[in-house]
Image (cartoon, rainbow, N blue to C red; front, side, top):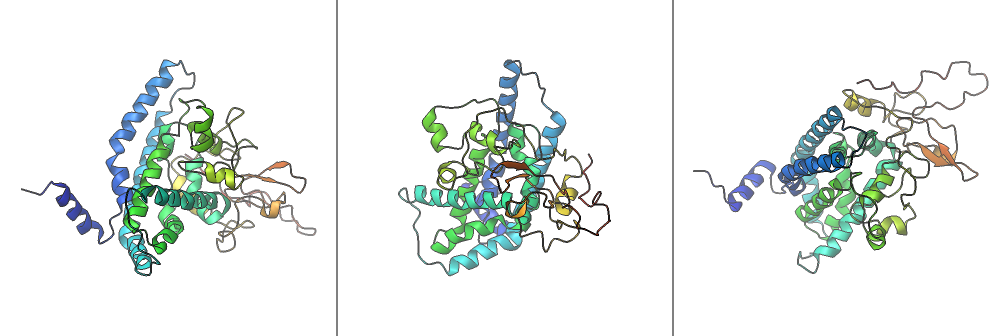
Amino acid sequence: MPDVSLAGVRHLLHWAMGDDVDWKSVLLVSVTPILLISFAIEYQIMRGRGRRVRYDWGEALLNANLGGLYQIADIGAHILFVGAASLLVYRFRLFDIPVTGWTVLPIMLGVEFCYYWFHRASHRIRWFWSAHVVHHSSTRMDLSTAMRQGVLYPVTGWWLFFLPLVWLGVPPGVVFLLYGVDLFYQFFVHTESVGRLPGWIEYVFDTPSNHRVHHGRNAGYLDRNYGGMIVIFDRWFGTYVAETVPVEYGIVPPRHLGGAVARWQAGCATRSPSTCTSSSRCGATSPGPAGGRTGSAICGGRQAGRGRSGRVVRRQACAPSRPRRGNRRSARNRGCPSPRG
């Protein structure tokens, strides 16, 4: 009979994934039943409150499918190169950091710190935004939105932000497992079924209220609250905003990414500002107006910045800059194609 013990499962995972098991993916796949049950509970709560807006089950199914594709892509990338890269970095580690009851919390804070900067880069650099835009494209907020992920994440290199911890001496498996814990926590903040919590909780943790702000396309909410489990780093680095007005979800202008979501995110969000055909110049820049200037060309931008006067200006996705004098070519239709589906 096959070995179904914990040791047997671990041996199977090592056989399938190599020396460095992707414990993040193992954790997220393992808790999938909990996620689905939680979604059903949320639906019943909102239904019991007489919520007028009905659940869009088609979008919920799309979100689940995107989450599954993301997970498959992430596991494949870990087997092909992420695991090997992390083991290589670990060979040249500076220290040997033990994993004990005393060190788990500091390591978790380190993971959260790395996640903060990864998440911030995913909003401020087009290369990373090309994967993250899928998550923010929904105009709804429920637990299924947490599953709405882009398949380009492993390609764009989310894992690079966590390698400094590995280089310091934290085992790669521990880093990725704790990152999985971080993501598992974040699933439960994608909801409107929970209002604002007591002040000290809102001050420290990434709550549903704080995360609703992060998903808002309101001018005052854009590119805020990047924390995964806590918002301490947002407060330190000036990116925290509390929920004060009703949230309008999505990107600016609103785009409904249906069946063409993967094609659009791969094509549009990484194209250059002027022609939307070359990614070399666009990939390392912000998805918003460069340097705080208005009228900049944007591809799939997250759409809000501050002009020289400091007031919030609205970012238009793929809106071309004003043509230079003598250039009679119409600026219309130079932007990215609008997704269909």
